[in-house]
Image (cartoon, rainbow, N blue to C red; front, top):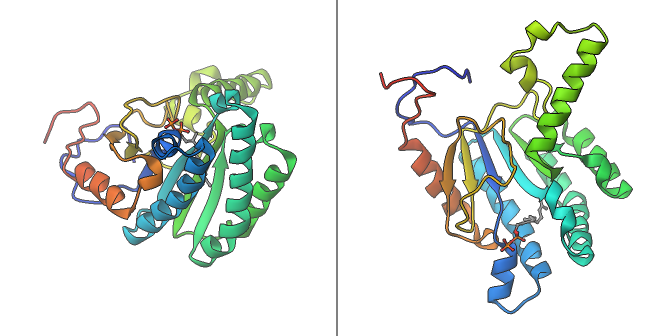
Length: 244
Ligand code: FPP
């Protein structure tokens, strides 16, 4: 979707939904459980989000599963999350593949344990020809780091004589990001009531509609996705222009 557009009301579902899955820890703490339990329930809610997107025929879903800042959490929690990612890939990939989901990962994947990197390669390979839904999982991802890396890639091209600095434009920059080839999110949802982007898709969310839901991520169900999509459909996007 081009940046300059004078589209007014949105009767159609978004093409790309991105979600900051927040509130696992609070969900567990409120039940006097360990935070790890919250992440386990959160992994189940991921299925709901995928199912909801398939039913609403939304072709792109991006989930913020682990940020570059999450490495600072206690070792036990980080290890548990890595275990959940392993389990998710091993357990869900055949089903996701059979229903036409293409799985994609963004972020600093080289920082993840080697076996998780191997599983990621396996999942990407297995599902590469699918086209019903592109599920992008952001792991060890930070928007600022992604932008810095894109700038480095462009600088290398300039240094090698393959790119003229005058030719660096928004499109060229976007194609150097981890999300190259994926449309920008139309709708960005954050659960748990917090109202921040927390370093997620900073470049890509320039014109996204932001919807903040009070539900904690482990309680997220299809109806919450529908509620956010309804709100999106009732908004008016002008991309900096005036209404028609
Ligand atoms: C934020 O809640 C959530 C995370 C840092 C982890 C997200 C991971 C999952 C939903 C589980 C697995 C995902 C996949 C793709 C299999 P928080 O811990 O910051 O919650 P709090 O703000 O209430 O403490």
